[in-house]
Image 1 (cartoon, rainbow, N blue to C red):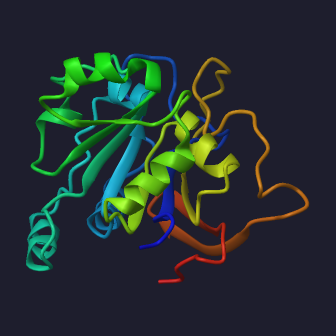
Image 2 (image 1 turned 90 degrees about the vertical axis):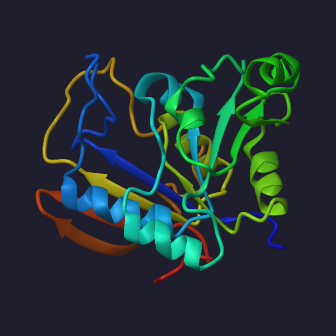
Length: 230
């Protein structure tokens, strides 16, 4: 078993690097053709990870939308949808969130040590709560996922999760979609937070692909020597 899964970070952002704006309505950063591309990527992964803030703010389902792709997964002997994974310090997630109530696949909640007991009381009926360290260590999360058979992991946000996987050198690939507009509000969440990134000015990431998808652009970066050209 690999020490950690092949890890793909997937993100959409505005031209000026924001994941969202400051309104209550969700900001759409992509288009139907790109949503379908992301669906195909999901279908090829064993697990999808988002941070607790993403669950609270966006209430994502994290399911493979295409019936054909779900059927192909089942034909390969896997669940129709990837395992859902989240990371939380406090463990105060709503058990009725779509993350927990949709799809038949396993749900894993990596929680800070001090909050594990409370999180198990709150979420134990809908998910497996795992002690992720105090604070939660994404190295431990990654190693535990590998031990559970996750070979390919897709990290879909938000900014804190992207930052942690990038700064801890746990990402093999970044798929970054740029939407054709500016947000222009420094209060809005950004793609990444401050940190020491391995792919800095003296160690530039390799741009492996540029693809126009309607009015958005996909930038695909190789971040490790494990990068999958396919």
